[in-house]
Image (cartoon, rainbow, N blue to C red; front, side):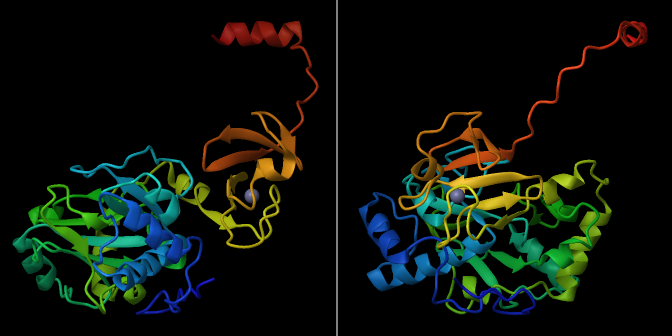
Length: 323
Ligand SMILES: [Zn+2]
């Protein structure tokens, strides 16, 4: 398991050698068998290094496979558990995106955006994760890691997708519902996304004050969301071992704060390997199966039905009168 340094100002992923869920060597084989190469690199070593770097993001990000010639994901992702890199590659995408409640992205979409950030004292060369394009050097994204304690300073725990902030050409994202294209082919097929050496995923840093001030300013202008809780609800923690399938290595299975268990279907561990064939509603270890997908079975704490007590006529009359 990679060591994850949440206090770091640079190098959030402190141990870039060990991957978490996905096996980089297996991914190298997967990438080489694909028609499009969604992981940038020419030699095996380059692809392997890149796959290792990407796999670190699984600690707090989900991957999304992207259609060739488009910028849209190949599957619905809202409210769904995160896909690992290996699972995303299984869709044979042309490029890859990541999403996370902890990634703050400044997307410099026009030249004017550099003037805008410079005026605010933001260093657009600040070393963190940079996502560039081989065909357009002056369109790049700067990505920062925002730890949970810093997110708590935002009224909604996130900011809405902000396009062309103050007409500056700068886009700002800090939300699990935004996704960031980070590797593979650009939609027009001319360039590729890449990260220069020293400005790659292991260099991911927490935002300097000027950058965080910008995020706070955007957040202040947003109406307070009634669904603030959703951010917390979708937070989940890895289970060791998983209470459904018993997985105690390469921890994929997780439990959300609202009591859902996402038990992932692997070749060694899965809910059906442990408990036999399951149908929606089946109860395992006190949890009921509520959703099935090829990658994940979702369970919810099982509350036995309360004894049915008929409504007394007087209460029913009152209820009818209120209509
Ligand atoms: Zn499990």
